[in-house]
Length: 509
Image (tube, rainbow, N blue to C red):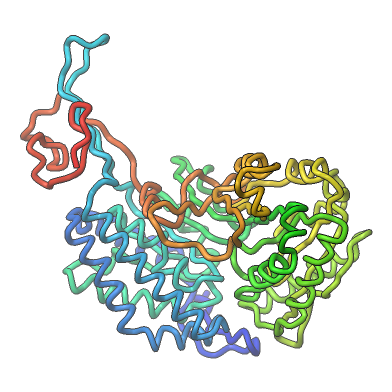
């Protein structure tokens, strides 16, 4: 049977543009993984790894115009958004190059023997080593930052792990082009092409997670698809770590005092956040707890005005559009649900932004309104109007894990008055990032960033953004009583690589 062709599709029209590849067979997946496995030794030198990551950023910037043009044709995200996302991707690659050079991620700890301790301590030397080949499953909504050259790939390469990427079907042409750019960067430093593999197709994705030489996987996508791969990773004869970002509601709590103080500004800010990128951000605020009464009414009116002025937009593909239109219609038919601005089809290929309102009491108990507690991908949010703090607690107690949770406080509450501190503590168990008087859309690439959260936001406690994302692809190993001549350079007493480390209990920088 001939391999199925892979087409580039224009989401603005739904028409195929050109054939860019063919779906990988099981044999081709095997070849890509084996080539990556064979390339492990080439990534051993941290200096080479850092240079490769910087070269990748340089090559991506040099190809910017072509990359953005292809990306826009396949995603309809627009040149401005895509140019910014590419810049973020290049910054991320360079940031990981710096982390590799610094070496703190290796967590070097050395203990010399101590016969006076109880029990006695032998000579112990600990650091972290790369896991091996990493499978990366690209996201649809970030064709640069969470795709072939995105955070999973960058952090895995920084850890010393070759990568095989399963391209997302929404931007296959761009995936091919980015892979070529990264391989060109690899060639500049005499690295084999196998350090970055690329495969297309649903079946290829399944073969990839099952391959015995794949040591870990990173995924960004739907709960359904991510859970299937997570289960497959766990069901292998030798299970592997699966770091998946699956879905998030990203709740927002607006206190009555905050709504009374600046309800119009909160409504306008919410509109900007939930419609940004046509609502296709993983941290879009999808549920907002706002007070009933006049203070909450001002917020809703402001939100209504702002969302009504938002132009219809194109989603990443027609399947997502169909799911959005059907999903908001189903939610809108539930009892006591109203649509101040009705979300749905904006045209044959577009969608219109909108939002729904519902009494919070409907969400505080199990029932058909549980549908409103599920992520709906696209420009829509649910505003749950609460009567008192008990209803807020009731709704929060029923929420699954999230990437973010936000609280909008008054000036007094932010200074420590009222329930401000209490609300922050109530939201903390729900999410990996807690915001006060901000909006969750926009995930800064910074050392202190955490992009993850309790299940189903992610399947692990790790982050996929920020410097500590590298930790997902490493495992610790200890050498005991090992002669100096047999130790890796990272663990030698004289520290020939100049690494930060903890030496006999003392932190050395």
